[in-house]
Length: 238
Image 1 (cartoon, helix red, strand yellow):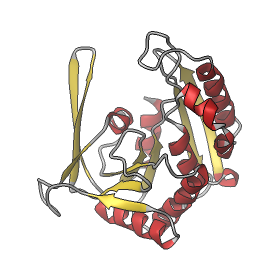
Image 2 (cartoon, rainbow, N blue to C red; image 1 turned 180 degrees about the vertical axis):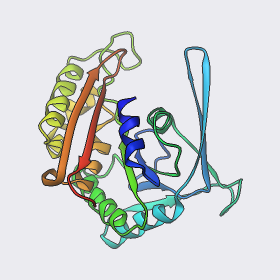
Image 3 (tube, rainbow, N blue to C red; image 1 turned 30 degrees about the vertical axis):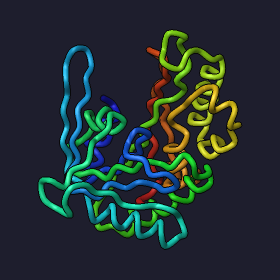
């Protein structure tokens, strides 16, 4: 709730969401460019449905800037070019944080895990440039669940690497060293099964360390995966 209040006080005109669970394109960053997004999430025998308009001008600016800088990205749509049938699924990685945020249009971006960590940082830099050139105020959410191997009864089983990776992620966030997540070994990542590294590195490119203010809020692993909440803001207007 605290993060939602902070975002509301910032009064963004739109929000960019970096999600691990959106529509993936092999070898390319995926950027929503439909008229709207709609999705549902079931929890505790209840269903929550969310519909969001897409800030299409910003989506296209982000894609254009990324392509101009040699990054592999693409906008995606479905059904029709515009109108009510132009609709993509809104995934749970976006629905959950957006549930607590102001009701404004969004752009949802899904990383490409087959691209290098450095390319994710570079894409974040392009995102920063596009936002700086945009004539509206933009919020940014990096939706990150962490290691998924905390519980032997979970779908990915148990691995001690899960606790170790989450502890390292917490420390890197606390100490404003997001870029060092790019140093995690591939076997370590495979054992721990995190979902947060790629979005975090895009955020790291969008807000460089010298301009980054970090307020670490919480870490918990209430089930088989870990969760971190932190507020990361820029010292000056981008």
